[in-house]
Length: 502
Image 1 (tube, one colour):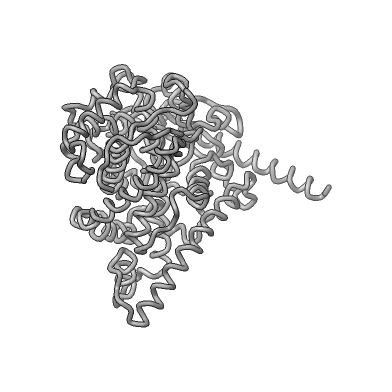
Image 2 (cartoon, helix red, strand yellow):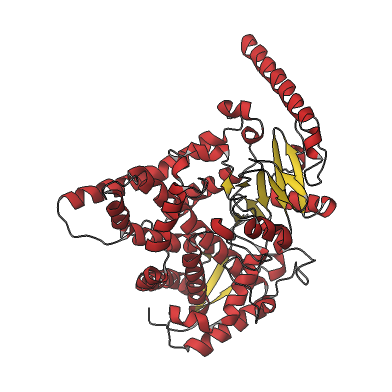
């Protein structure tokens, strides 16, 4: 033990010397960077960030401005906290900042370097993006899957009906997650993956959340590269368990399908068949590794973000009963008491759309966009951002900026009525899916799923808080990760409104 203690101290001393030398060599460069806190020797501003970086960065931005730089160990991090700065980075300098900083946690996934979310723009990234945009998320493909989405909504309502008769509370997040997950699973593999009311659904949700949590968690390995091999917080080891769980499941589906195709069984014509066709084309570099990683990305993003948005929206509606009544009144006027919700109704529901946008403003699915990287030395607002510098866009802070939004802390869906703000990342005060070339490719599907799920829940059932809980006492704390989940899951009691034919 003594020798290990001695080696640890020697390693720490070398680390300190190296970091101090690096800091001194960069002192003159910092004059070219945006303003920011000086921080402590060696560790910089690490202690200023804590477990809720989105809030810490927002607080520091009030002192140092909407574009600031922080020294965090060996890393320099640039943080944008205003719509103007977001536009500079994501639109005007989009190409220059299109790279990715890959968190050490993500390297716990086998073949992480093939993930569309993490690779930098290049031929591989463009091919993956093109494949998704032309085969999975086109309007034509999404329209073709409309019947499947309606089927999942019918299953959702059927699962809730017994609970509405018994007066039991519904775990909104679990049910929404399972519904979104089963849709993705059917679109990819033509099978349901989980029983929405089973423990398995919650267990799978926990697996996905661990990936989101650890991938977004401040990690000392990212700021002191010499420590990466040690994984001092155990983040990479823990996230690997969840990635491996998903990969084993996906491997089983892939190899079953390969055997089925070889035996001459009829095609499913789902997304897996599309990917396998693509991988088996002559001269294609798109092998089974790409197939597995791309499907993993779809599972992680497809279930978590939609469920998170549905849960936060329902939470805000339960805290604002009059707003919920307005939504239900609009639904009844458009659909009627005996009708069931169809996707064709959604464009006729402007107030529901405003409610969803306002919930996403206050509770953006990704509080910090995935970390961008400067591809070259970039001049930005009279500052110089050095090549390979990490750049973060604080969507959470932008969404609550009092210089941009009137009464930003209030839930006011009416602010979006008649507004041109949409989900495509052109209004930089409202960018829940990001903007520019790195905008979330699954945005068209997520928008359809969230609106359809909420419309179905609100048209078919009335909702109340359990145990006499009052709206003002609902806990609104969140848990930070790549996404921003509700810390205490929302439980709500349904009661049937109409017989909507399911």
